[in-house]
Length: 257
Image 1 (cartoon, rainbow, N blue to C red):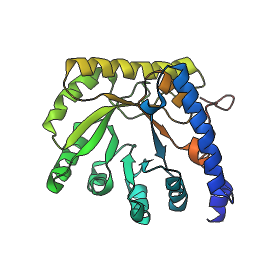
Image 2: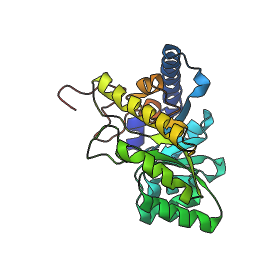
Image 3: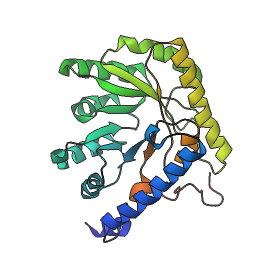
């Protein structure tokens, strides 16, 4: 580990991960109890963006075999570093069409489909390789212009177009909730995604059954509102050395939004 890594992960990252995972599992289980859901309903996707390959290797020793990355280029480097582990990789961030060829080489799942232009590019690359890709349709449930994702009122029509892309396997809807210390506003984002899923599932034969929602800051609320996949990074690996690193484990600093 470099000095920077030691500052983030301590000189005993295995112990750090062990303690974090115990606390994370406790929180997940309590959220399941509150919502009368079995723990087996919840899939934990370990988000490893900004986490170096040696630490991901340690996390794999704790049983993780699927990791989520925001950036294709960063993920591709980790795929090479860790190819001996035969891990699964999910891209959970916005995708530019010039990164599609690289993504298709290694990703088993894409959580941020929000345009037909990206769908076209993915279909072409996947078809050339004779393979398929699981996808989640990203929805902007908070209405923030800074966030990617389809407006809620465009989701049904978008989903109706997905059969035109046989290499894409629709799995569910995904959202990023409002970054807010007001839990009810966060909860409203998850409720909206669940309602959209229910409507789309009723009106189409899309197979969009799953809800990918909830991160370190809000996964407990997401579980209570029906999340099937929670995308958690900082509760496993510790706060990121980025501007959003303070937003963990769910409390904003005073005066911030």
